[in-house]
Length: 276
Image (cartoon, rainbow, N blue to C red; front, side, top):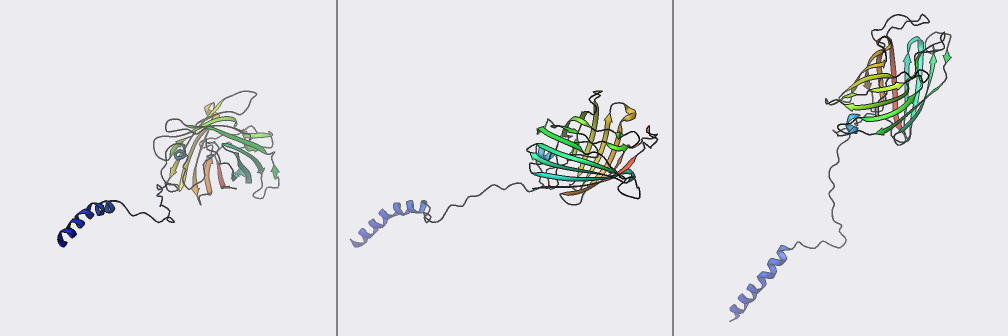
């Protein structure tokens, strides 16, 4: 009789034990559940959209090539300083600031004969630069920007003007051309509102593993004789500091009206970008 009672009690307890085993033990009240977040892409990883077209890796954005602009702009709170060393000991300094999202303001100052033994050192009036990026672009449409650049190149004291006049008002687009790292930055500009002549520019850039950038420009396209072919190599010393070695007016010859050569010009540029 005793054995029968124990067996019956054991069989009745089995369903309750199975229910307890199926339920997980309750966590203590002072223990918070662990949340697992998805892994974010690493800096410099492959991205899609307009960020990928502008090389959104470790390096700063490329707002310009040799002479021609791109559709890229500094971020809000960003700044950059670019120094160009050009012919006859000249130095051209640019500063630019991201004063508002998508909007950059800058200024430039050219000094002729500063480097070397030329005694006729002359500073030219400062000029302003403005760029606004109004469309970020996507996989099929280019990023678009509009701006103004009042800085010319190769000032002639005799003619009291720049041999290569300012870009003036321009519209520019930036788009990847199918091959990763290869981008086009075509633009149109009006440098002289008195004549309203429209000029074109067809620049290309090719990023080599975020270590260097190959630059090629066909600029100032209105008539073939006055157009310019520029080429260069941009080397990234650090993500924020880079140096350009470039040649302007490739293949040109002859003389300007002031009897100075209009042949090729070698330049070196240093640029540093940061943020406040």
